[in-house]
Structures are given as structure tokens and as C-alpha cells.
Image: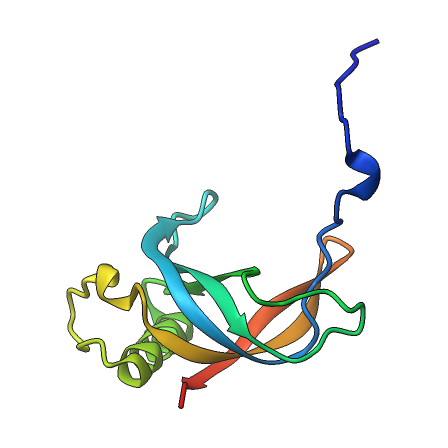
Length: 135
């Protein structure tokens, strides 16, 4: 039998999705990634919640992380959708829209992320549905 010392596990939080709604977020990290299966490129955003709606479970939202990937397929509709999303984020945050984008320019930018729930592998997850300019 393999034993692991897990002192404090009784009080450890279980990852609960954030409620549906609008959240003021700040970009903490932004970097390119590639899917493991098909090699599809994406821009990966790590967002930190600065403010948001009260949660049904009473948890605090400030400081929570949201991970958001904008997938950009090489061709077709997926390419247009992905590039369109990235362009929208650039326009609302004031990052120059260029064919060679410096993703570091997104770091520190603030925006409003609208979250929705989706099921993934039988688990409810919070995902970014849309973004808009923070006022």
C-alpha cells in the first residue's frame, strides 16, 4: 500500500466553477501553445479575477484564475473565428493588431470576461463566452 501524508485535506477546497456572469479580469500571462493531438496553435491567456458577482456558494472570486485558450486552425472557419477573437481582445485592450503579435503586450491589460458553463468529461467547467472592454 502506498501512503501519502495529506495533512489538512479535510479543509481543502474542491475546484468549483465560478458562477455564470461578468468578471473584471487582468491578464497575468499570455503565451502561444499547441494542441497535443493535431498541433493546432492557440493563444493561452491566464486571467486573474479582480471583481465579479457574488457566488451562490459564498466563495470569494477575487484572485481566482481563469484559463482561456483561443484556438486558431490553419485554415477555414476555425481560422477566421480564432483570429477574430484574438483581434477583438487586441482592440479592446489597446494591443496593436499585427500579423506578428507580441503576446507580452496583453499582460496587465484588464477586460470584462463573460463566463458560461460547459460540461467537459462529465464535469461542469466555467469557460469564457465573450469579452468586452473594461470601463
